[in-house]
Length: 178
Image 1 (cartoon, rainbow, N blue to C red):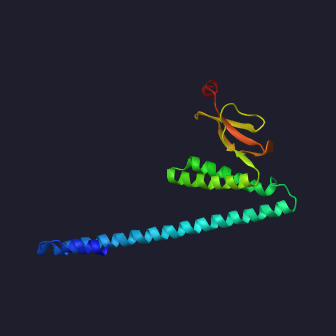
Image 2: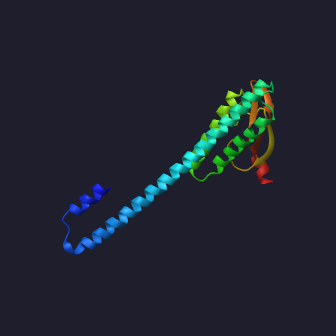
Image 3: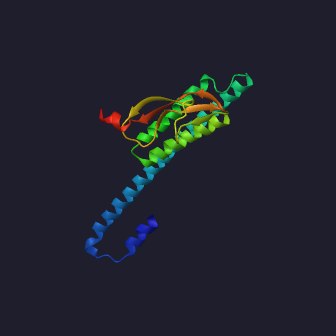
């Protein structure tokens, strides 16, 4: 940065405009320092969030190994909170105005899904084609939307259903007009 400033100052500038140029350089340097500090603060916050997230996953893995060693099936109540958290992350990503935020939330959800997969559980959060009534229960209808919207994902342990999913279907045209 200083080399850049020196290069600018070495240019031949008329004597009467030197104070103006110096003021512009000082303003530019101040803006660069502020942005560098802001980037450093954001980097620290990101590191803090990352370490908390990794610490949380380490705790979950420790609990999982404890449950397995005690003979408690992995699909029992401790995982209900993870199932609900993944559903909330889906909804937050869907409603997010920023594509960057939506991608970040989806990344966290994918990590949760990987953890659940390691525990032998599969999260079914998309319905492609006809709705499987053995996995999903219809809880409502809404206008708009080309395909069913999953409110609560179905959870499978192999082929066994652990938690029934909930979906909202598109309101049929004749229903929407009456």
